Length: 189
Image (cartoon, rainbow, N blue to C red; front, side):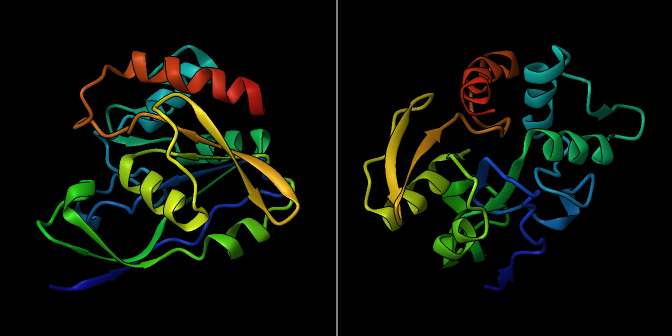
């Protein structure tokens, strides 16, 4: 099976306060845009629309079946939210982006990533595999969905939030997912 290298660089706005970490992007044939959470059926940008604008379609371009990438990046810069994934190289065991079908070959250098964002106060993982990779690296117990755990990075004490996956395969309505994310955004940003 082919080993895939992450196709994107970390998105780390100046002064990043919150770092969002998923597992790994879907296969490129599923991308609706050249950015994170690119699958049109993924709910992340609908969650953001609900949390920040009370409109799940705020970042959605329905006719073109894509997202408004420039508006997304602008909000991420304003709110100082960085994005990357917990795996740098993976092997797809079944040709999907589902956590159960991803074998992490090379995890992301999380120490180097956090070292690049000294203003970061919290990390959020957006799925089970991302949470497990992160918690294994830092030797912490995974928090329950919607909760956080404290962890040390050098002399800094940060929060690790665990949120529901934005994948449609995760059995929860987008509005309910946003109810988990919104208090975290309010606490950190």
